Length: 293
Image 1: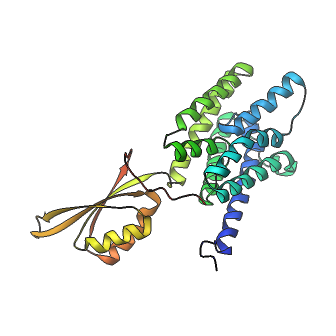
Image 2: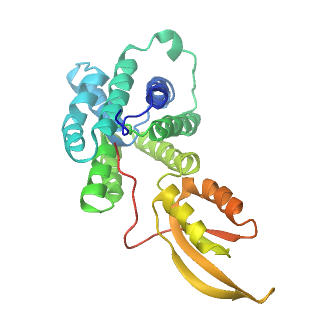
Image 3: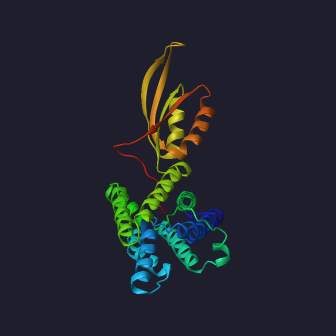
């Protein structure tokens, strides 16, 4: 039996999360985003911009899915080769389903939300978009588009690509402001800000935390950190001034979503351990990143 094969339950869970993410994203595009005439970031915003530009100046209606699939074609091939096959395939499923539903979602669902306030559309649309992306991330996939590009550059060249993605989004918003109206671009910035803030709250997989652990069982605690996170640790000898006894300080940087499980495990090993968790803004050096499947 192949030990690397994922359990059927895990695969089903991933599929359900991705399908739910796709439905929410398509619903968001057809309700909040359309109601506010917003231009989101990434390939979704670029797709809507191209679609509306061609319709307004060429009187030709191109399906949303056709443009979205075309824009994603090259990034998909690159990620499939260099990042991870399953990760790319699950991401492609999200893009395919969300694109299809955006074009073919029944009007009865679209008419549920009739907002006439652009600010409300930007805020609540941003929240719903963040929920959709979070579900996708928890499924071990992405929503495609610029995510493919950013992940490829980050993992292939160890460089942060989000500044370039941000610059690209600015170009799209500037084009929207020039072609249509400035207020649409400004409300779209509010939409993007809401997405960013909500994502930082909903999903912490890309954040790091520094753990400072004072313990009398450093070997056992380090073994737990190594086995649970594949991260290393540095030990420093010290002495507690209250009890005047020798202690060991373990220093380790882990992913934010691993902290709670580690604390629970450490307390089982050493109930008297003192743990301080710090927010980590930036790290330089070797840091284990879990490979994508």
